[in-house]
Length: 103
Image (spheres, rainbow, N blue to C red):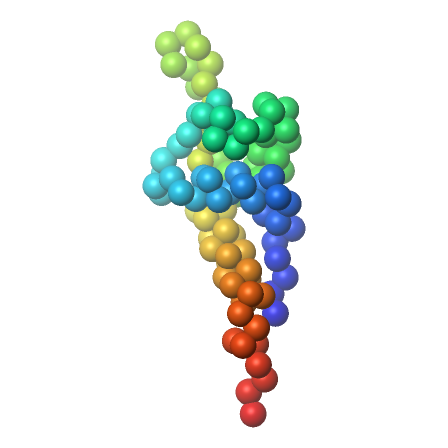
């Protein structure tokens, strides 16, 4: 049986990755919008994004829209693959009949 990815498995990070995975490949979301969708404080979201960024699961771009700073976030290819593997592991845990020994 595959172990669950500890980077994704934390509840808050799982929520972040699941939300980002709903975006189209290459699409980005602003930090305030992600914060609003998740109902997280800015500090809490920042901590979890840093952990995901350290694992190369998210890509964070700091830019400006006019004179206003903007932080854009997206799931990296590595992050998308990690999330797919994580969900496959969860499915295997939930469906133990697939784990029966073969004769």
